[in-house]
Image 1 (cartoon, helix red, strand yellow):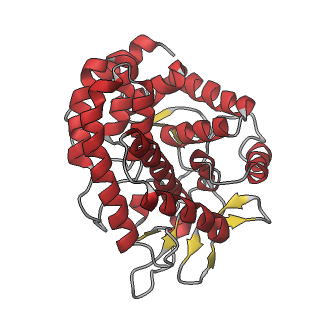
Image 2 (image 1 turned 90 degrees about the horizontal axis):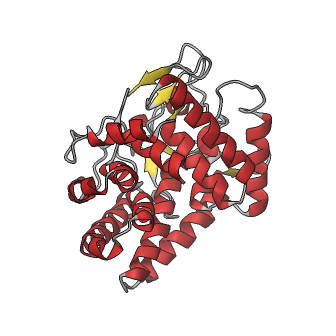
Length: 327
């Protein structure tokens, strides 16, 4: 995988891009790529990020709550940290208000777990997860991916708030209670996996999918639970030597699987590193970069052939690949 190709894809992007087409196509992802490839693009992406953070909850929005976690990653890598401080103050206040709004509007169990009203908010077409109708209140599922990203972002806001000398009492409460609730409602001890929680049935869904592994990103499982997740990965998706670094079941796909999603791989890689699972993380990195080197920069790849499927030379894909390549 050539760093030169990644730089070219990033340089060709506009610091004020069109509205994202996928839930993880955020300006903060482009900011991460800019840190690696072209720091001169960073101010433009930071400005766009401030415009992108919602001021209130919108049930029709497909945006994922990844801004805080990604922003902390950008800050940790930036060479000129002092220059970012004015922007961080603004971003911190906006994100804190948005997270508070989410908990006020979308926490049906009052456990600091957010429910999802539309599958597009998740970004992956697991139709089986959404085949039943919501109840009269519109409530449907509490999803591991969405809540993992929100918990990860809360954790990042705590770190940023400490840096900015903010009162962290509220954030710490959200963070601790949400982690507890994830393990109380979504952890399945029998399968060793996190599963979505069906609010209509007041029970977990039986379907297993990649989202059940991703809570490692937010350091939600204990070390023992993380070992169970790794066992599931090694005996399930990795049992065959095919392009299955991070394959997600999906009935809408002709192969029986959705594509290998680049952001899913990136999240799983980061999560494995948090538990010192370096060998497994290295496999994710190696397989993902090999796909990009062989097929080119794409946002997703075919789970059997490895063929690039969507988002050729996408700057969002380039940003994630640059972070994998240069870490």
